[in-house]
Image (cartoon, rainbow, N blue to C red):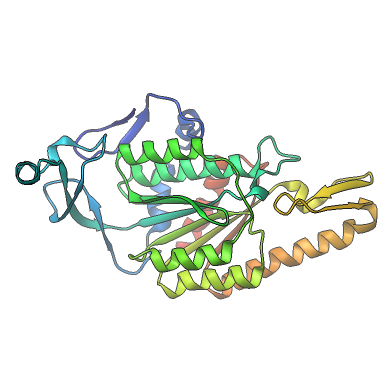
Length: 312
């Protein structure tokens, strides 16, 4: 179970083990929570109202009890009337209401030069970000998608909520083909409150459609961060012998001599990255290229230090 400090339900440690949550690595980040708070300060104009349990804030609404919820907030009057358990939800001001959109399509299962697949790296990063944001009393939701939405958890910050995120990540496997543009348009229309949208994906798909979908989030007043996740081999194309390459989503095959196409391939990949970097910048979307050979905790430290410097 996730352990807390008590009334604030701030997560401090984990007793049970999870596949994608590594307390020993996250504990090395020491001051990262403070950096997260400083880094997101000013991301979103104004404060946003989000549900937190407590008695010093304004009552908002009820929802059905879920295992792990704080029993102090059971509404016994509602139970007496309906013979069902309901939790009182309250509202308080928060700086951050975050949604992590996690690409779990077939192409994310690729691994060559790194010790783990893009999919596994993305799950570790999702778990780490979820923990850090919940630990500072911000709310975070996670949506996993390929051509369909595989699971969707609305924002929350309780230990029980984190437990659900971690367990769903463990159960998820790389799936079908990607439909990023169509999926993002649906999600942009379904997220009611403006907040922070974090996308973790290899961005395989039509850039025109993906960029239009990213613009939809911006139109809805969300702050958007794109973590473009690649294996280093996808950048360097280190192959030396005649090789059959298989598209992981369509299963189409092509046999080539890498020496004949390496320079053209690298040029195309660089143009692909440059386009995302430029057009995301034009839309006020933060774009970061990440390789799976860089440990996720080091990547986060570097990213947040850079963001903190920009805000200064």
